[in-house]
Image 1 (cartoon, one colour):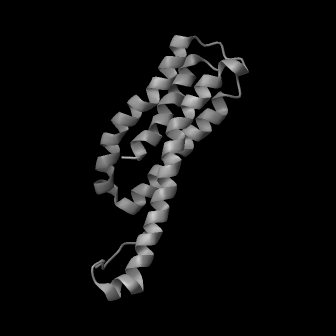
Image 2 (cartoon, rainbow, N blue to C red):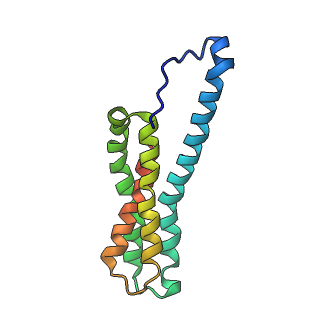
Image 3 (cartoon, helix red, strand yellow):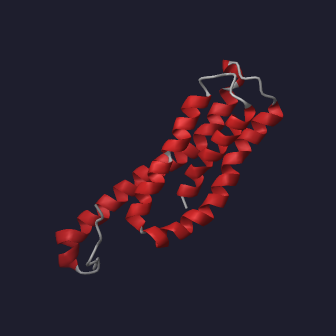
Length: 138
């Protein structure tokens, strides 16, 4: 179901009191929730990587540094795509889709940390997926 705003006159006091304030409040809360998830996914990986050796992963300090540096790089690149996607898809639909994309890194982290025999390329892939959160905050 797609909801589009056919009339938007926030400067009109009657419109604002009857409909506008409710629409703006709904959009604000949905945006806050989405941005909260975006930043959590983006930053979560840094905390996970620091604790990987404590649970048995055999990774060097250089590998840890690489794993922590991948999400900001991917997030920066994703910002370009995400900033254009709003105009292609539409603001509300894109907010929903981009928030759903965050299930990929959340699932990936949950899966990869459960097996200390996970190959390094899987850790790199999950690190890149966590960058989606950075791109989604564009």
